[in-house]
Length: 67
Image: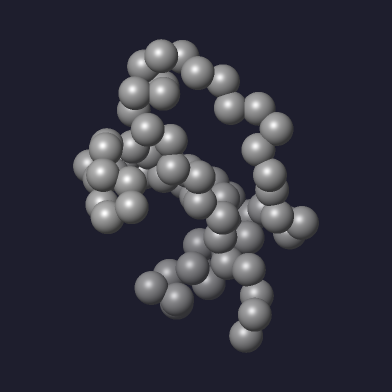
């Protein structure tokens, strides 16, 4: 229905190991309900291991309905 559900940042493990800072990241103009951090071993588009930082704009219950 056009409602923004989540925003995802993908942070490579190498960047974390190098203690890189991530400042001034863009953010959607939407309320944040909760945030999840999930490890990912890699996938097409981001082959190296990384973390997904998922900024949810809907409740966990609503997100579960969408999966």
